[in-house]
Image 1 (tube, each protein chain N blue to C red):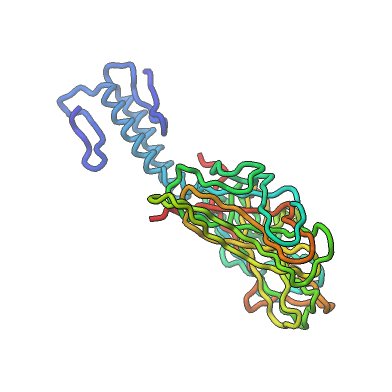
Image 2: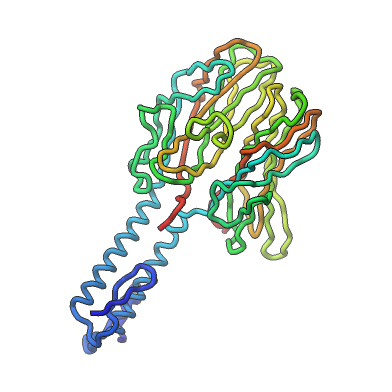
Length: 198
Length: 208
């Protein structure tokens, strides 16, 4: 068994040899490994890492300050980064530095009182990432502000794209006003992998 | 003839015989052939992730206080039928408010649209836009945005939302718009930058 093909290096017996089962075994396993490797990028793309987390209970009311979303349901997750009851998504440790797109809709619930036009409602996605060399953790934030109307229950849609490594993403509501409000059930945080950081 | 199989693509190869027969080589060649076909299929699917974009070219009347599904009259792209991952169209004239998932998938969906406000909404004014699942008007079937334009402003007021969904085959997304305020209305959707709904498959719930 001393011959190999020109491009892929597949082993084959020389014409002077008897072909035996070992020849066939080596050739089959070499082709198998090569094809598996060639299919890998396609499979990775079709199974793009992504998640959709949803809060299932309205939070406690507050008038000024901040409140983090707590996820009671996982609508979709193939990253393993979501845990029911937690307030953030964690990037898999095995993933290389990557670009991710994150988005969210916060429904603002009126807990008590009457909404006041112009009271501040603001949603934030915060993304933490770890520097590969120094280990320093940095945070990137994305905001959207939809102040109160007097019809109760604003909807805030926010999104952003960030490089992330051994990091996390979380969703927060900020308020400043006179009405007790909270993050409503069915508010969502989602994210999807875009590609590696080169 | 005892045959074993490789770990990944299950290519058959002879095992217990001392001499490889022509039938052994034929089996192995056939399996390699099929494996190459499946690799080519993966590559083709990879290049044809299904997507669709539709919009409402003519104005559509929006009744005050009604979260109204936009009826689309223009299809920019509707390539689900060309995608081996979808094997079906997203848009159908039979259900012109919907983009229906031909197969189970994860999608990114954007909605945008404007309301042409004929008279100022006043301090009680609201504009709302949602991407909605299976006809929902609230709850877990809605993602979107709601805000208040300046109380004295008139003319086109636009808004947009970026959303992500896990869809089963047959689930549909709609673009819904809403306004309220002091005037009785109705007001029309804006057709300079018309109401538009776009979806793109970004992942599959299962990958074989």
